[in-house]
Length: 269
Image 1 (cartoon, rainbow, N blue to C red):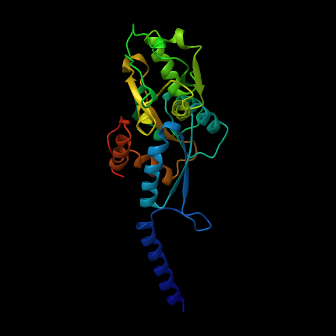
Image 2 (cartoon, rainbow, N blue to C red; image 1 turned 180 degrees about the horizontal axis):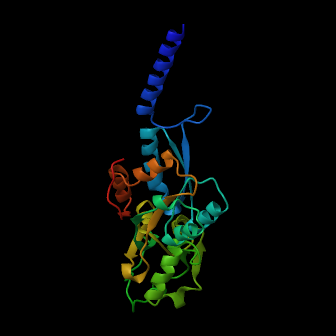
Image 3 (tube, rainbow, N blue to C red; image 1 turned 90 degrees about the vertical axis):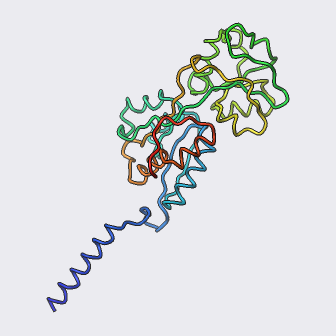
């Protein structure tokens, strides 16, 4: 009898060893549902991340839930212990903010993407613009200019820098329509509430109603950088796999399709 018990115990040990050697696609919760992670991400990433998230879920059975908004507001929510596993910002400023407060896993941080800043207007209602000093942009259109709130929204901060660099800020600062994030900025233009707006090239790319009038010179504003990192204490295996997947060939291909600029070497998914 004791010999039989020893045989059963050995078989159980071997089985456990095999399970450990060949893990399933991902963990599951207590109810048996597929695992899920939550990523707080800049509004300008909405279209591409939904596509990338679906691809990641198909491969790993790990659902990725997104909360999109302006990076400042999302960083503040993370600071207030919102249930975010990862943070994907449209500027280094708000990632640095969380880093200084020790609220991200430093070893997971990656400066992943860049973007371009453009002026848009409704299709068939555009006007001539030259993004250079000496051009009278304020006099080229009537009405208001939509930008992200320049005190906090990354796209608005870059927009203010560009307008100041080209000498247009003083004549336009009282004609601004500040928006809560870059997608809201684009919506002001698409609804015809503003004659023009300043958004990222990637936002113009997904709009069926707006067209690009001109692109700001890169030297007219700070470098646009999108860093991503796991939130402190939330860097599970699934979260790390998702962050690694963002650097994969397939994910980088998706980013390029939406006109983002990659800042990293592609990794295997």
